[in-house]
Amino acid sequence: MTFARSITTAAVFALSMTFAHDAGAEIREKSLRFAFTATKAHPQGQGAQKFAELVEQKSGGKMRVRLFGDGSLGGDLQTVSALQGGTLDITVLNGGLLSNLSKDFGLLDLPFLFNSATEADAVVDGPVGEKLFAKLPEKGLVGLTYWELGFRDITTSTRPITKLEDFKGLKLRVVQSPLFIDLFNTLGANAVPLPFPELHSALEQRVVDGQENPLATIQGMKFYEVQKYLSISRHIYNPQTVIMSRKTWDGLNADEQAVIRQAAKESTAYQREVSRKANAASLATLQKEGMTINEIAPAELDRIREAVKPVVAKFSAEADPALLKEINETIASKRR
Image (cartoon, rainbow, N blue to C red; front, side, top):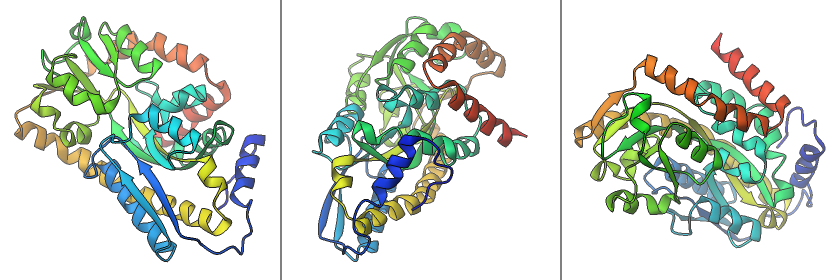
């Protein structure tokens, strides 16, 4: 495993960890625990299954990955803490949720940053993605690869979102992230941060009026059972980080680390393909399930973009300006 243009001290440190053990060491019997919040049928769960299969294959059956889906081991922030404490080995979550460890990760969640998955891939697969992962070892984590969740849209039980004013007073569940809370409060909603495993119940009991997630997640979690309206906004695109406990990583020898790295790399193209196909197919399924679907008109999306500019400015200012510049330049190169 090599990293191109690793220019920071942290990046050099992270690279050195990969080769910290005897390169001739043999692969040992290992059982690793991989927790995630989606179902095993969701693209996130399918990616985890592919990763587990590759680990077992590449280790000659000696290394096995046990999967814990449906948030059975807790929400995203709980699983990150468990990784840091060494009581869990691997998880996958939206990259922006790591902003509590490094503000730079919050840049991935900036509203309307990406227009396409191609732009996002170019950012996370290049130097920006490497620099973000280089910040993790000192936080007790190791970055393996970037998967995707996709573009987020909005569902509600009370009314569709057709214009900026429709957000006013809406109790909207958001991920446990300051950016998401500020974003929807700025739009006039009452943002309610909740762990993902609690969401379906909160919608069913009308604790909240709505939520926002990619289409495949809305379908996979059967939110159509408790939500009537789906409004296509594509307000945020989520790259996902597959991360490992540094305590677990440090306990692996070089051959075992190589198995993990290669399995993570090979699972990425598969997971992204599954995710994009699922999101593309989910719209028709959700309509068939009875949801009323509307596209937010371009002029109204422009009004929403204008309204959230203070949020973009606030969270951009908290991060490394050079990294933001690099993100914007990478995106611009893909829009030509």
